[in-house]
Image (tube, rainbow, N blue to C red; front, side, top):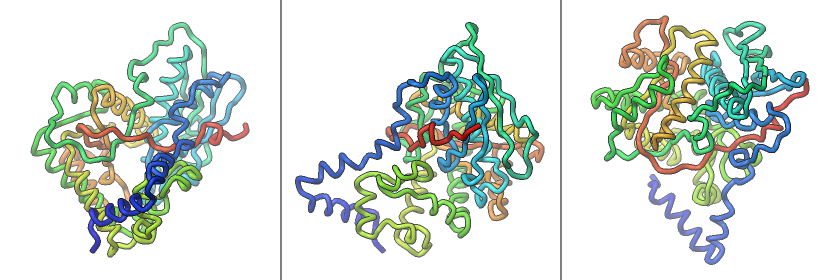
Length: 381
């Protein structure tokens, strides 16, 4: 079986073969068009568009960016779910997608306040869709200019917020006071711990949950279909799971990084991915989780609003945060891990729900995830 070292040796050899063109090749692999929304200036005349251009930077499951918008009149936004961007295998009841909408709405409200407006959010004005989201609006948001608007200090960290999927530094513990700042970002929902026994148990459980998802063909293939390998694919579809950079592109060109190989549980690519996630999942140095009193759509939105605040607070504290919520997914094969997680976190009551789990630590700097420009997510009223 080809080792990870061998895979990177192949890529390194290809770069050597490029000679003087190697540096140019590496420098041109960044998908700049797909990352442009992170750096765009607020040039829109309409305050709603200015806020939307920042709200689309919200964290969301598999980076599906499922939101669609309609501008209604001169002061209102109607927010809908793009039903083609849901995750029916790993998220069969659209709970995680709804949490993503919560993060989006929290950033929308923050952006409005930063711009001197109040965003009045009405959730599910035509009723909560069950058991899945449908064509009814997720929210209607009215903008009103107000001198009473107070910018949220966390909003200053928006453009450097990341979901950090790299291994964390296991030599650096997370101080209790740093975890306290994360909980303070959403004290009604957030809980956190760096207790060694719990950390070890959560490392093992989150890796088992990854293995369940990866060994269940339909859930694994859902992710494989969303792979974007290399600059061209990322810029053509700036969503899903991006695998960019010079090394992945060279591995893909050598036939060592393909969707077919990633889908095959007997392949080197599959084995290397499993080894990579084993390392990632076993470097959590602390954990934060979000608990709601119920599991209504409003509860799920509240969890999403809380999560982006916790993520921003982690950024402000110099911490890396990575959602590891596979064990909370609701397809049948994951039920054992889901129950074990609720019990491990001391939330056994069926009426109370753990909505999010994330590992916390100190990690390397990572680039932002690709985004569709705000104009592409608009639909005519």
